[in-house]
Image (tube, rainbow, N blue to C red; front, side, top):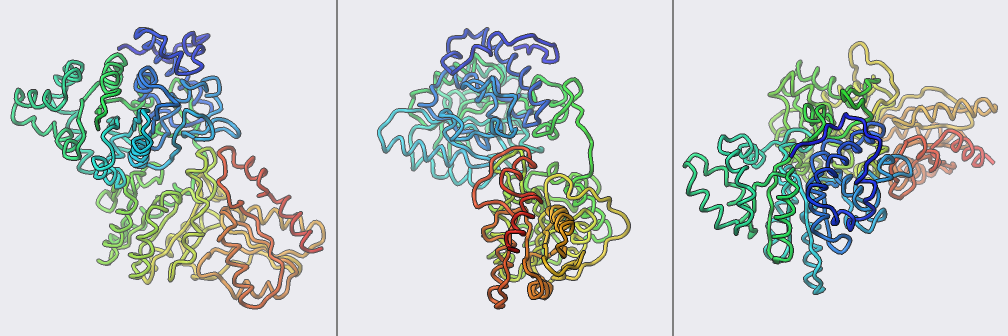
Length: 630
């Protein structure tokens, strides 16, 4: 098919504007569906240019999503998208196309599937590798209930490098006889996929024989896949038999393999889905797609446009701003690694997001990407640590939750000095509740022996990383936000920090403010407001979540009338909770005001707006402190 150039201005979307539900999609001819795909791409690129979002993945699944809604019937039938960041097209075809310009915006559409947003969103997810298990549960529940809905799981090839997906595959033949899995093979997840299975799929796409197979795909899907594939194998040269490893692999798990099929041929996709619908078999359809299809900037740079901020449509140019905490982290670790070959860094398929692509480029032998496998990444780091290496394990706070068992039983129990670097700690804004890093203090501060810290600005971030690099006794962890911390330039040489020692920035006699990390600036603003009212206010940068500087805490608790803590974390089991626990055990009776997030899942949207909504502002802090003062 030929895509309509999306850069051409259009005055309207004649087909898309009439789509109010999947029923309207079913009324279109195949030729009109091709036009609809072009309109969707155009609207996606121009809408996401203003909001930011996961543009590349969505451009890659336009025809797939159209075909699914042409053949199946949601909400009766269930579509489970792995991660579901590629569900923008699904939203547009299920009555939300007029709202797509609000995607990821405050009080707008969520960037992922969300059960509370639409009856067509049967399962919400934001982490990779979850869809196959969830879909298998739905299919099994259907079988137990005796109903007849179809369950379709759509997962990218990267999901098949993920442990939970293989666990589900191992269980599928024992649980149901009727489920459809679509393997969306685009060679990319966020960054280029790694690992043995990813190489299988890559060989499939790059082989000289692939184009021949590709042309035969439409004919192939009309046959019974196993028999047809075996006949085709017998006709190709011996050296190309490795191409069919996916077929062998999935048939070993008890699934009927179909493909590979052109994932941008909407007519072929409709034909195969009509063939699969109602067959009551465990089938896997292998489709080949282009991430970013139809928009040259996304095709040229799929890593960048997996998920991005606002951009210029013609060129894909994005604004360059203040260095982020991730930039500072990656630059620092790379510099440390240049001086010490024992320093290595590990990421779980996120070299772009964590910025470790810097280390990958400059010191590739000291860089490891293990794929979407956080549990394995943690254990891998433990193994490196036993041999005297200094592993920095960089994973988003929300994804580090998957490695929780390994942190306790493998790192802490064995006192292995792995360095946990938790990116996106705190509110992650427009990505929403699946990506907010609001629980890591709660799940780490009680782990025995763990050293845990958070910096107030960029220079302190580097100092903490340097301290971690030189701390070889126990595991350590650091949390830092998405985007800049305070926008302070990093200059000079890093310095070692005394573990468990706070920084008293300003002294005071009436109130003591403990501003942890990102919210230190809010604590400072609160101090200025209190001082303006004649209230003597101390300002402390705690630095250490664990070990807590109890000497400093007790000193202020015994002399001030109110203590106030600030944290970009839920209040339940957070830093402030630790302050209350210690003061209670020490027998010090002083009111403690806590500024932080409520114990609930916070929506997506603009960070200042969400902070204002939930009382994370200097004004709210002042009001609470004054009330505590009486």
